[in-house]
Length: 314
Image (cartoon, rainbow, N blue to C red; front, side, top):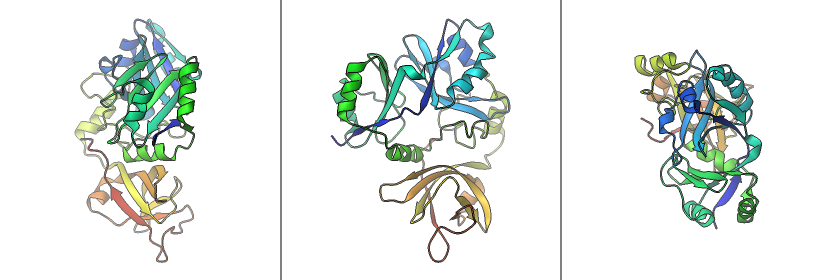
């Protein structure tokens, strides 16, 4: 088959159990917990009181337990914070990362691959299909893209997945994330960005009708009362090496911050960068430079930067 599984074991998994689990999380996360069911997951964030993102996550339920799936290194950090507020609730928090494996499938005939493995494939964005010892869910993408979360005890199924073919090369997966405008919060950038800067306020990670949660007042004020001065944009870089250390320049001034980089099929790069909205609207000329301030482009010292589209988030 043209599709191959990708090892995505760069995650942490938090379980929130107890009769008050849903009520507790409803007052902490940006999503509406009422939208989470055994067949539907949602994306969400946890913010500090200043409205900056501590962690993003996917929220789902298995066997009546709510789970938060986040980037590796964020599990215990998030647990320590939530533990401060859960003491008066009939609920407990535990990190259960070691009990599961996570795989992604993306590529040609991807839906057929999932059907071959599990008999059926989830249809809509965030839709969950329970399987023995785990679940399969569909990610946001024009091309079907799925993640598989399965217990390490499911030896027979895991062996079947290994026989199907598993790669630890994340290049294709990271490119798919960039093309969807997805930035995950890692320990290196927690408490750094507001939801607005990463488009979380328009990509479905925040429910503005659900009521209060930590940081809600500031997040809502930025969304409703002021037009965004900076946002996340996708840029294509042709014939140039790009990295997180590269700088986006306009008239010899640094104007952009690169938060994600991925290499394309033809050896060019696509990246996600926080840019001033007015420069983007003006179609201003932008240049990529390295830390030393030297251009990484052609003989004239100019890199090719092209604004690319993101999914319609509005």
